[in-house]
Length: 338
Image (cartoon, rainbow, N blue to C red; front, side, top):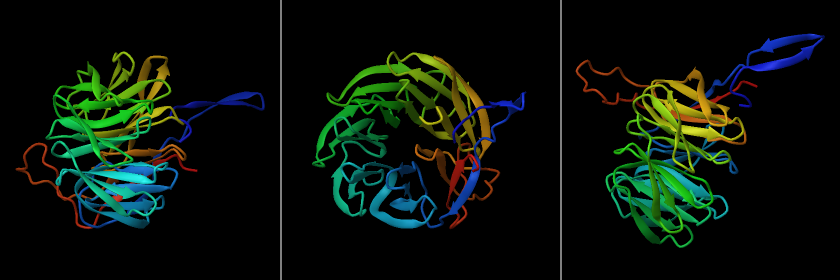
């Protein structure tokens, strides 16, 4: 995706013509199937592989949706982080309260590390310190692991339930606090929480992404709102309406846009309109349940896992997830048509 807004086509035969960009759309649907739910999908742009958590293992797909292998023994897996430089990957296993360390090139499991809190959820590799952070939902803390030795080097209290995280690759880590509607800024070297910034009126913030060049954070909440935050001061620059059921957001430095994945079956596209101003420039259809997202910065394609769902019973409690149709798991590829 090379653009995210209408653009002007220049002078042709003395006439100025206004054209409309086609915009991103669902280009392909990869029918994967298999058992297990899913959470944060991750992408290795160098290796051209998608890492898809599936409850008991991580499915590894190429960018045409073909299964290339699996990382096994990951009970309750939520997320995957990796370092191509270190040829290493890590999974956050929510049921077993562990991190599986694997060799990125072969997917061979090398070690299993116990976390310092229950239900490790989001997981992040911080390249400046070569440390891995797991954000433990029920433990309300973060576990910090040395990426080279695989040893736990610290634990950081969160003061509430941590959700998704992002980093600036220079030693600063950011994480949503779902209980307090805050973003926490953490120094990766000292393992200290340096700041806590309120992002209200967003409630229960989940997905988090970062525009490193502009030093901006994008956080999405479960009350149909997103915020853009200055990552230096913590100032909220914009509060924007998005869709419902949002659990993820991805930022593409190539397009300059952030993409909020709404479980209702849409993507809200956020773009800058000035040095500190933002808008939702478009809302595009995806499919029901496509609530997490990852972007390939090389191709500007987006990938969203989902499935087919059975109708919810009339007496279902609010917030109850509908049952999935067996063997219907799929990954959507979204982008601008060639």
